[in-house]
Image 1 (cartoon, rainbow, N blue to C red):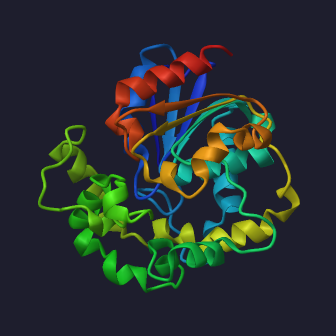
Image 2 (image 1 turned 120 degrees about the vertical axis):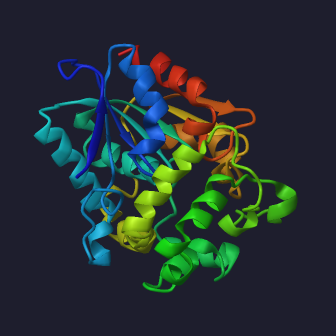
Length: 304
């Protein structure tokens, strides 16, 4: 496992950052600098299958149980009993699972973008998404090994990353559905929060590793749902702050805003202290609104 660190190693106040798709530890660079300057030790791994971390060939090796196990093992190797946890996108999903499975290892959680969601006990996640969006939806296309790799090839990494990192939700362009990466215009300049040097770092890593490891997380959604059945009605018993941009794709799933704001979220996460919706922010909120997100993280974890 490749791990980036900042701050004083001797600090007892440790923040572990978990990145999403298709990202790297590098997505947390701004928060790591900000919180290290405030006395925290910051730890951000490349998750299994990403960057310089090992990428097992077996699709089944990318279940949430494997990745949560990786994070727990990382804490053990570093001698960390409990940490502050911060997640984004797939990293947020892994953070929710970690708090369900091992709440004893987490002092407090700040999750961004992806809210805690229960699909239910009667329908597989892939079937649910197929019914909702159809077989051409990107998560549905990702399910069959080898199919998505034709589009998400290492040679096409620059175009892929440029499109994905520039994505924004607009009701007009999406028809009420989550837009695909291809909906973004790759001829447009990079958004102001992303430099060419930033893009070069992401691209160089995915040109080297490809996208298969990252896509394999999606291929385990049904496996996660099945194996996590013993926790189907469990609640997240960790103090939590949730942050999302009002332009985030995940904030416009059918019914999600009612769930977040009208009590359902609080039922599933009883120690949810607040929900922060940042105007003008899209999906990659920790990079788009770096200072604001850093301040929200610090404001919350400094209470503990």
